[in-house]
Image (cartoon, rainbow, N blue to C red; front, side, top):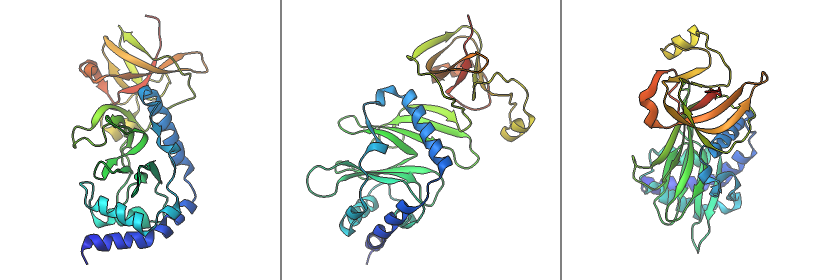
Amino acid sequence: MSPGVRLICATAALIACAIATAHAQPTDAASEKVVRDAERLADLLFPESHDWARVAELPVLATREFDQSLASALGREYDASPAAEAVCVMINMFMDDTPRGQFHVLAREGPGTPDVLYVGSQPCAEGDWTVIWTKSHPAIRLPGRAFRIRLGPEPRVVMFESGCCADPNELFGVRDPFAPAGRIWIRGIRSTKWLDLPLQTRVEQRDLVFRRELVLRWKPVDDDRYNEDLSRFLGTAAFGSIARRFLPGVTARQIGAYTDPGGTQWALVTIDNEFEYLAEHTVFTMDLGWTKLESE
């Protein structure tokens, strides 16, 4: 029996029990909040995706549907695709009793295996991943968590990647999930795990032209004090809530607003890469953050 066949058999035999066990596990409230906040932010960053299918609202593939036939079909497709890695990846995806997200039905067109989407923890490694099975493409594995997806002539998916372990970096983006590696990002926005998202006012998105220095902060607090501990940890001088400083001339896109208890108005903004040449100091490599609204 070939290794591929053994893998499929192991998957099929364990899948029903494993999926039922995973559904019965308690949820991690802190992790769920991180995901909720990230999805809320992704909706602000990519308003063009609001009409795409929201992954959390897609039908969940019922445990009873995960019979030997379907498990074997998904196993064969994954094992034969460029996405396949070590044997433990496919086995742990089904047999680990830790909750690993959900299998969702993307489409049921005609007989045979439905189009399936998996979003959850990555087996054998830190972080989340997304796996897509469709009839029109080999199985695709993407690092990170998919929030919204659009199939068809121009497929797109909104993704969120969080840095491993002590890495504070995060990445939000829109991808073509089926494009060759290296050409799948349509748009990417860098952020940090430390970005504070207080309850904010939705605004009509607009461009803000800064004829003064732009101070981008990871939380809407006017704090410029030198932070020795953070500076030593990051290996660069860190001051209060400052993520980056830009010279005058930046055009930023406002996507949110917040008024603090003292009445100070803040704008949540994104900054395009074309203004990198104006960055004079960087603590966190971010394209997204808070800046105080002041009269020009």
